[in-house]
Length: 464
Ligand code: PLP
Image (tube, rainbow, N blue to C red; front, side, top):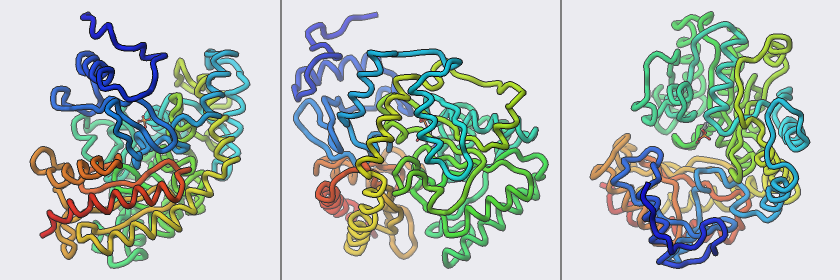
């Protein structure tokens, strides 16, 4: 081990204020010792973050950013909400940790508050440390419940980076880890703008996507399929709200064949779409539902699976063969209890719906009308995507699918322009996603839209 920068302030107690020298030390230690996710280690240049509050964060050089990515779409209540920070501090003082086999007050209360909000009869909660573990356990439950091996998931999806979860993932993040042996079969979900079914409208897209799933089930053999897993609103693969009737149709296909229906609400849950869970928009109740991120805005890692009575009954007298040392960690559960209370008291879910209807939706559509690089605006609540194109008529994406390096230059230039304008964007392939804190004010949302407006003029330069 080599020692680095002994002069840097204590990272636990030091001030969260701009100071370039400290920033350089933080960066140097990061480059020396931190191995980053999803990255070629020597070509990345991570920004050193000095502090964050509400929907903003800032670096050590004094640059402040309005965070339209909410970190990784998880700070639904913004950064450093004082009530949640205080709840974590109080819990650290009274019981910082305890094993999962015991009944612990904050764990019981977190489970109760979550179950109170989940759709239908999903009343039991299995806690994990994050989204991928939630997906792993949901699939394990489905396989044990049905005694069947296979799972169906869509292309253009993300379900996490652990073994089963990354194989379920439909987008290129899977490619480097795809074993081809995980018992996963991919199919096309509905996505009218880039329809796999040559559909002309939402109703046709819905009908054809359901027929395609029905056929996939028939060809794979219904008796071999344990589960169908879908993101209720596919998130990091494009924010694609499903057409009316699609999820109800999937529910019906699953019921007819004894297949477990899993909804992944890791990104869409806890207010992001303007409802506690996106499933409420579509009036559908899955058998299992995964959550993480917004459950406590990521202040302490937490995720979980909400379980139907029928699946819970499978494990009533037969042990569930799975567990995690930190399942239902008291600090994470205290953060969840405080977060859910804050979201209810401050009406943050209702606010997200209102923002989507009155500011973000209309504002983004207005940008689309003026910028030829915007091919489509999709979303709801505080969860939107701009699909950027080189050619509005052909819908050719602004950069090719899974582009890297020089081929990705237009999106890199767009992202740089956002940052120059004080906006931290979520950028994935040819899209930018708009996922600010769900309690962002209307004025802050408009500030973000103005920065997007300026950055889109850069994207427009690449339109043919
Ligand atoms: N499922 C969905 C829909 C997600 O968006 C994510 C993360 O972005 C995951 C699962 C994985 O969650 P985690 O990164 O907490 O493991």
